[in-house]
Length: 178
Length: 427
Image: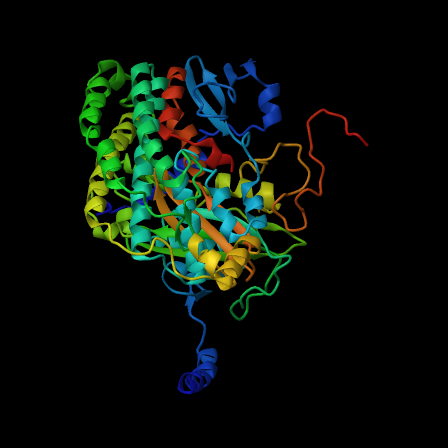
């Protein structure tokens, strides 16, 4: 027990001084299927394009997370400023059977991000879902419209400040009671 | 081995998909307004569904036709949206499986499996050996019932009504087995974080053998009935064609990707549970058309039977859920004699268990493709964010490309060959 903890104390400062591992200029954290890249919005398209050239041909998933009520999420690597929104992209490399996750920080006051559509056409529906439910606008998307909620819906339901039951049920063309 | 891909071929497919206009990008309002004949382009916009018997639930298709040829189209979804990802944030990890099981209602156990594996990954635990094998057994049985359902609906969509009856009949046998194990025919909440809800009942081996023994013969009957039928082949072969490069760019997984000859199956390529200890083949097609997608599912039923037979022989003894009182409830008998067990039971069902902060993504091969679950935990007893990557949701995007330049009469056959489950599309 004491030997281990003293070992940790010795190791801790060293790991901090070791320069952050980078992949195409973005810091990488984690191992195996949890390998995570942290990226800003600028240059995200080039990053995804470079990863595609590395063999990450397929984009598996794209979703958004609202960190409004969980601001002290597990520490982000140095140089990455935590923002309210995060867009999480999962890519897969079939030839060496690896996955990679990209976490893109998107600020609350300007919830926009370049679309990944030119590199992975599959994100069309996923980005529409992220727009619909989380209110993140993907610049350059061919059809930035609601996908699951009705076109005339107000608000973005998956945001943390859109609470369950707070907003009255919206029916089309039925006058409200008040 | 997965086929080696040529980056230039992939780039060609990418350029084609991002620049061609297979997708009719109209808003819901516009589609309704402009429904009918378009004088300017000599085309017609047709709204098909959501209340249409062959749209597998509530899928709506907006089609742009030139004569009888489909030029552009767009699947309009959301009619079954019930906010399950939002609901998932309000339920504890103990309750969570009841929510996700309702997404892909034809293959509910896969949803539970993905959710449970993700939770277990965040907790840093692994279910006991027997639980892993039980999960594998139940999932393969579920793949069987899901593909039989596909055979039934695909047959019905193409006018082979007797196939519908046969498919439902066989599926019913499997559901009866599920009822004897989980208590419910669908929406089981059987696979839970830490293991499964209950051990297999006495005589489960006999029950399974009773289901499996007549199946190969009946599958051969279906094969004669459908595959050997000229009308069937005529309607499916060469319709709804997609290439491997296009399927990859569109994120398609499961039978759609495999129909192009691209062998990718998570069970074999990134094994989870104990799939590395059973022998099976990945069924692939070669033309990427509706017929290949049908044939693959028929072949996968045979492979599932093969896997289940191996599980029957290899099922180990032991615990069916992890003996960790913080994660799984104590056995019912202990509650009467131990105050501690009563407290644990009470704690688990009132406030649940806490999961360390972090994030995890785990994917499994559902009958429709890669089913993934992404959970962000803030250290509390409820997921901070729970996202499910539904294969039907993503696969549906291939529809405009599959249907381009095909006859309107083939629409139903092509939609059917994609096998979308709207509960999972809309979540």
